[in-house]
Length: 157
Image (cartoon, rainbow, N blue to C red):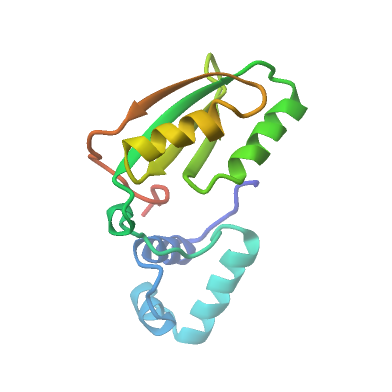
């Protein structure tokens, strides 16, 4: 997506929405110095432009029994575009994989994976990840704690 030109009000809208996606249009308008109708029009424009990709609840993984988070570094046997896409398609079908990023360098992909416990992660690793077509190696690191988990991106003021 190409960079979009934002004015100061757009940036304030984005900042407020990134902090609180459940804010009402009336509250949002008040915070950015608009009335409700133009605020809603701007929000719709930001959504249609792709600047706002969606709205999500930030769910505590532990509340659903996901006590393990693992980062997996995956190397593939082939980096042909068709093989990369096949791996990405396979990963999209695995709900425990929450993020998948293709990297530059020695490792082809880094995955963020959640699991209920070590046993379920081990089962996932051997049956779903290392067994995937074209996977050469998988190196995993179990998270001990998270010092920062901030959604979104820095928005200029």
